Image 1 (tube, rainbow, N blue to C red):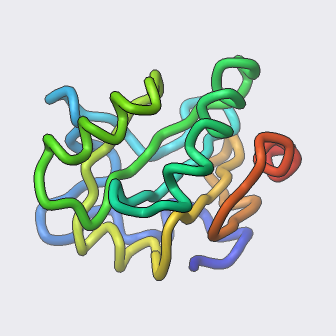
Image 2 (spheres, helix red, strand yellow):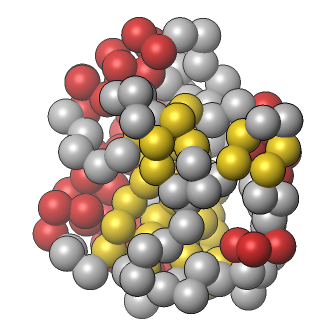
Image 3 (cartoon, rainbow, N blue to C red):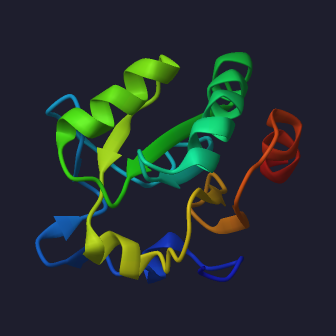
Length: 143
């Protein structure tokens, strides 16, 4: 994983045609992975990951209860958009779901799922984690 205190501008902005300022989403539009004036959690997951299934509801609860925190989930290692849609529908996710690829995985140094980065309002990584996180654990990392 990338080191804390790493500015997002140090992450490769455009690799193999993927731009973190203009990531494709599951709904057919685009989203920036940059914080937009709020603490932002970037959540990298795979739809087949059982730990992701166990922890994603904690992330959804945190998002719903805290207007000062944004969440962007990035789907990785999926075989089809239908597979990602099945995951998001099962958990009734309301935050943006970006569609990642191998270049994003390498740029963010993702080695397992789920992986989280917490960005400050200034787009600097202030916390990171891999594996299961409770709602409280996610909240505390965002402080």
